[in-house]
Length: 290
Image 1 (cartoon, one colour):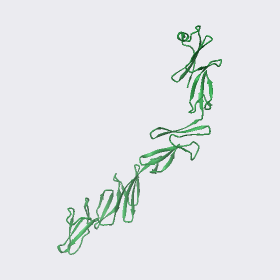
Image 2 (cartoon, rainbow, N blue to C red):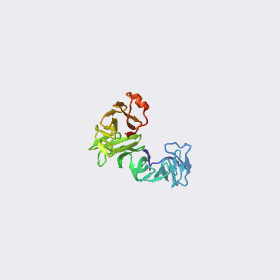
Image 3 (cartoon, one colour):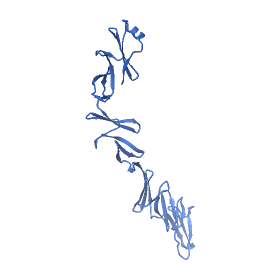
């Protein structure tokens, strides 16, 4: 926020009268009569005309004339420069005692006794509403706060709860659901609600639970993912993932390529597993994406 303070109704000029020579010398406030910006007024028959305003680095302005210097608009009143309005950087005029909002900036022209203060402060505009710096508000699942650099995400509101809030990066289990306020990038947050456990083909499994689906054995992990432990044949024999077995003339293979787990079972006349695998044709297989 920027603030400018200006005293009004106080003379910006000093004058010296030399009646014996019939003239008045006006110079900027605080300057002597020999200052380069001085103004000399003649006096006729003792009559003093309305005085102009003489401002340092702002020139001379006749009585009744208006002019602008910095963020203030003045009117010259018999030698006194009085503030009549404030001026924003985009040349918008803010009347005394008024507040003006444009392009996310709030402009104030405050009057306090004999002083005028011009202030400008950043604001946030969200869903048709202006918010002051420091204001917090809700937008969907997120708690937002208006800062000097714009809107920042302060956290996530728990689903179906009025007051529960998660900080970015925080997660919480409520009942059978895990609520996560995930920080995905600088200034970006994602709110998700997941069932505690794992879901496969619309079935829910508890954390740590082991089950078999289409010859593939899984275990449910704490983060909701499924870990492939190995394969199981029709007789219930378990083959660890990445292992090959030769049992009673039958080769059992359980391996993974990328995200797909394969289970192969085929007959072989050799008693050497490596020979069976080398001589095998592409067999039928069962697979599962994990």
